[in-house]
Image (tube, rainbow, N blue to C red):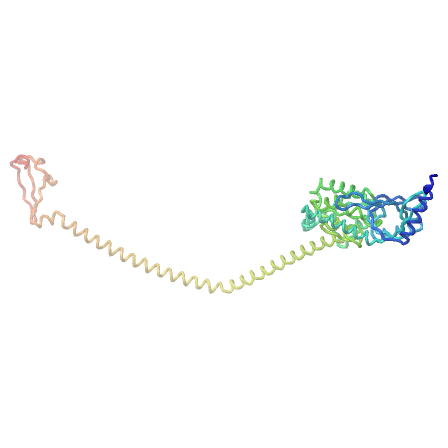
Length: 421
């Protein structure tokens, strides 16, 4: 060794670091972190890797190993999962009570003594809020809610695990409804818990979309199962599929504590599979009552109309004799008026014709041969015909001249035409 130089073995230095850490940080501290890895040892111990990321870039800025000893983990895990509805696994954010530890062989780590589920709940709520905001920004968050159910929804595509008790409860409620309504269902099997849930439900939705004309709506039911499995229903891809699905969707995933993201974007959310069946029966009963009400209204309207028509007919029948008599009197009065009009017209026409005949008689009389003879004219006849031209006569022929007071018979000596002068 060099004189004046202090040297340590690695064990000695690590022991000094351990002592210094215990002296500097003797208490327990609440620490916020994200679980990047969680591994449960067969002994029951839980070994974690905790990290912190920079919010703006997502870059890891801190990292530490952590341990939850088996005796503590047996208590913390079920309490955490029951309180948050989430599995204690990688990817979650936690607030834990830790004590810093430095071991000469294993180095720096944290021992976890307690956990605050409310912090993780708040983080889950923030995550759901972020997914919903993304869907709103894309303009699809309310698309499924805005779809209108047909007046009589009877054909449903069901997404569920075939062996789930909730599916059995749902079908029993539908098939044994108190009104005897017929509901037609087709099951599209899907895994409703575990890592395959998201992909399995999306594939079922895709299969239904290929035959959407056969259905009035979709029912997603889960029922039973661990509350921690609800994380799968807070998925952006699944929520986006449900929000944009062309048929209205009912969710009944069997929980009451919180609404999952798909609950918030689906057309209708109920608590349980049985409640989903009750909702369908209630809609059918509502339609049934509406039809019954319409039938009653139509019957009452027809009855009222018949009563009014009967009253009208009775009034008409009562008033008919008087109406007939009044009509007869009116027609008789019209006939009398027409008769007087015809008589007046005939008299006028007869007077007009008589006057015209008188004028014609006067005209005939004025131009008659007798009238001409009376005025000093004469009329010459040859063989009973009126002589109109000297060319019709020849010397030696006998002619008769008619005068007003008699006739003269003459012999033609000569004829002379006025054209020869």
